[in-house]
Amino acid sequence: QVQLVESGGGLVQPGGSLRLSCAASGIIFSINYMSWYLQAPGKERALVATIGRDGSTNYAASVKGRFTISRDNAKNTVYLQMNSLKPEDTAVYYCRAEYRRAGIVIKDYWGQGTQVTVSS
Image (cartoon, rainbow, N blue to C red; front, side, top):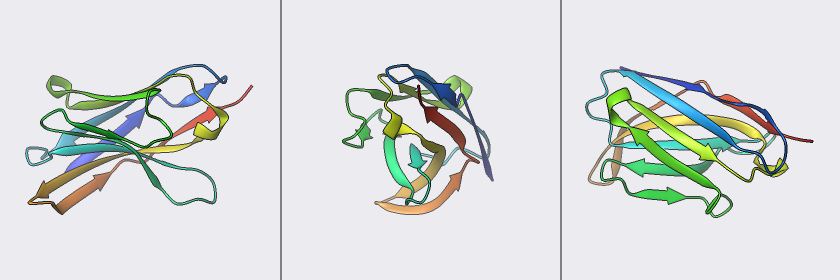
């Protein structure tokens, strides 16, 4: 079993920065992809960024150049550095851990989410 705990959300002004953290614990040996998703009120959950074991990353077009996903393997933690924040970034951000084999998601786990609000 894998447990994920997000932290770092809060209220920030437009143009500001925030760093989200997702700490993983439990039986995590098989996890090979970590992602951040967002869900705005009344909208579907959407992918923000993904990082693989090889360090490869993918980003949603709306956050490219502003957000950076990274990991600290020693701490079993993934981060999302968010810069130049916009009001439209306001959402609950969720961490997702995946075990994939041959392109198939064998198992995934979700955190509880952390609120990010960008407002003046």
